[in-house]
Length: 339
Image (cartoon, rainbow, N blue to C red; front, side):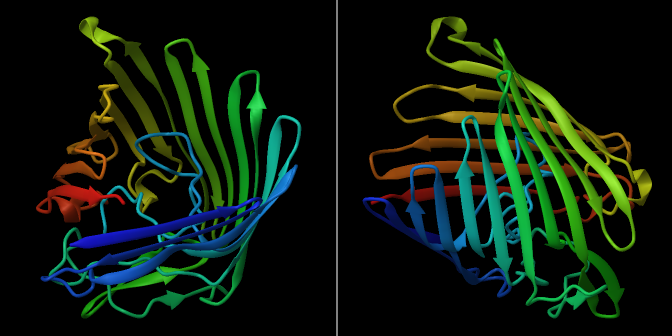
């Protein structure tokens, strides 16, 4: 069971927001945790703004993989899609130009990724031990920084970013009693694009990453084609297709080395905000590896909303990053009360 409470207040050019998240798990103590997702003060001026405190930031354009998104650490005990993030202490300054913006992030303190315990799901065949290891000069107390320029060029939304700090995605080393998470320095150059063309929306997330042991390019790109008012209703139906590539190939320890994602999004456009997204991802690097996802949401009343998340995994090769989840399909129903 989980709960999230948010409080927002605005007084002229000053804003304050706090969001607290708590989860309790009767089977796995590692999944029981609390996190201060947001606790920040924000000042708005004519052509700049500043945010100070704990906050969440999202970068990216694609649906199936978020390669550019790097500022916040993933709360990996919540869901397999990696979209749940831990709050990150930051100084976030934005300066607005005529048709673009410049952002600077100062990020004090590194947050380690959360992992389920022995009784938790989803997890690898061996659980991740407490006590991470830092290598090549990385440390938990260092200050990371990031820069981002975003704007519109010929109707194309463009984001160009730079990150220098501790890699949010650890690698793992095997020990007798489990796995140890290893964190190392990372420099990342990122590019995200969205280009609307009639009923088509073209998308791209691409990163060039440099770590002490390797440097590589990875990207995810594709489109979403939407038909409005299907079969005489107010509903929209969208078809998604995205291809992911990692230049490391078989040497990559992360998913999406050479994968194709296809999906269908049904937006009902009703007063309840109902929508469904069905997708399947095929791994051409591993061959017989794929997963199916289903996401749904709908408002039940003025105060209640319902959600559905389903992940079904199929993997035949032990080298596939998703192989540990072959027996760990995921189904989650959520009911949220807003007041």
